[in-house]
Amino acid sequence: MSKQILRTKYLERLQSVRGLTDTVKVITGVRRCGKTTLMEQFMDVLRAEGVPENDIVYMNFEIIENDFSDYVGFHKEISKRLGGGTKYVFLDEVQNVSGWEKAVNSIRVEYDCDIYITGSNSKLLSSELATLLSGRTFDIYMMPLSFREFLELNPSDGTYAGLEERYGQYVRIGSMPMVGPDMEQAIVREALLGLISRIITNDILPRSEIRDMNAMNKILRFMMSGIGNQVSPRSIAHELGISNQKLVSSYLSLLEQAYILCSVQRYDISRKRILKTNEKYYCIDPGMRAAMVGYLRKDTGRMLENIVYLELVRRGYDVTTGEINGKEVDFVAVKGFDIRHYQVTETLVGTSEREFGSLKNIRDHYPKIVITTDRNTTDGEGGIREQNYLDFLLEDW
Image (spheres, rainbow, N blue to C red):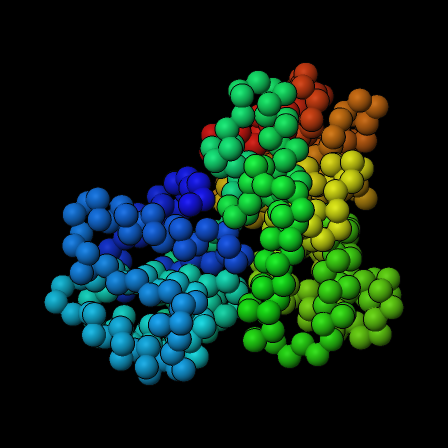
């Protein structure tokens, strides 16, 4: 049996909306990031608090006994297990049932239920369910393991060198709970390539009109290679020799809906407006990227930037990439009134002016932070703070 850790932050969010029977709790995220395990952990919490087993209804729609041809059969089957007091209903990968949203809405109205569902495609769960429920949903976006969670699952020896070693493994094998540093690299690679294939087959193809799998694979490999670069559908089409720019745009959207890629808009800090062209893209998991295009020493800065982006999103920030006076700010992170500006660099040795320059141009009093692998960090000019990357990834939030 594989090792597990409690996904505490997500469990806390589920607890915060427990009992809201008029609201469907929707857990989304890339396939195999831990959504099923989270449901199981939450059901264990309910049992520990004395909820009777008969009041917990769980259905996994990826197993054959729950292979319903449409929502009518699903509704008929689950109705047998409802009634007689409040039931906690857990529906795992429910999008595999045609018309599932009608059944979910019906049991919400008919029965006293606290409903939790998971799915691996953002468009499917957000658009179809929202149409019927008119805002009666609470969305939880689940991500693969943070570095802190990775360490909890795979403890280091506690030394700085030990933490660096674990981080190197985190970059190479990634953050999916299904893999670990005790596995052979070749097995990890095959497992992650298989996962990517399954995502395309199960979460993209059935909900799209893809006709050119060769183009899909070329686009995905190109995006993985150029993580963090500013690109547009036009520039990608030109680079890959694809004549149809709209096809590129459509395939990028599908990869994002399946949570493999994350797009980041550009933000003009001076004019306080979103720019419409040349977004950046990051990968949801560094291991997937390494499995597809390999791991190169020259990419360590690029992957640090990717990991910092994912960590900011994990902490609840809306993240854009900033621009001011023609200079780039890696990330502008916003959470309510909490606004922060970040630069990410492997080292400040010989590059401090370049990395600090764009932050110096920002005329506000919000925190400005440079994240670096340098161990000895100091506060720079104008209140700009340097922060070691391990300190950032392991800090409380």
